[in-house]
Length: 132
Length: 132
DNA sequence: CACCATTATCGTTAATCGACGATTAACGAA
DNA sequence: TTCGTTAATCGTCGATTAACGATAATGGTG
View 1 (cartoon, chains in turn red, orange, green, brown):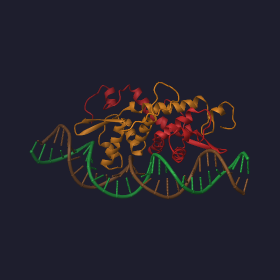
View 2 (view 1 turned 180 degrees about the vertical axis):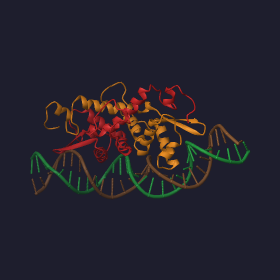
View 3 (view 1 turned 60 degrees about the vertical axis):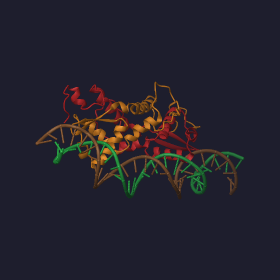
């Protein structure tokens, strides 16, 4: 799959994730409870099953639904283990989003830009005038 | 807007973005059209206004709504310029999400893990047994 | 002033999301 | 086999989202 590389300029990267793909990953992360689940899985050194339910202030069925969303997006995988299910992160699914965001950060950094301003490239070229 | 402050502290790096904050950024990116807008803004070396509307196969009002969402999240800023509006990216707003995702990638990378498997840390410690 | 181009907002509709309790399914253990 | 534990699924509800056309607002120009 896609390998983590730091010096990738967005355009010249071999395969670029589609808009739909990136949006799907972002959507899976677009809820505080799911971010919390990811953080929990990241912080634990061992597998956790229903502990997730106890950590979040949500009903079991709600947590299960959030886990389903994360699993569908490939961010989380679960292995059956006795009565519980062992959840863990699947970093691979996040790679395209990491790459996408990192590319943005790097492009802006390499251009030494203050952000939020109009016409960044024109500004960095001291050609700050009308933006047409 | 309600602010929940149940801060599940995991590792005290400087300041960690809240679950709500990260989810909000992800949510703003959680639509193909908005990803496309970000890409457009990233690829153009000059300001674009209504060109965005023409690039996306969506009605003007719909594009305006997507831009509003991105602006609300701070990802895009717009400067009025004659009849048009000059949109550009504000990388700062994405920093916390970039950091969050990069931290995940680095943690897994540093542990030399294959992902998607149960008990990554236990496995990397050759202690592959029951996950309790 | 009226005109024009551009963007924002309004109002509506269908679809999706998020939450919950209740129920079902798996499966090891007694 | 039955029991107990755990997770997934179902059904429902209110809230939110996404899309559109129509309309309003902005602001420079003739």
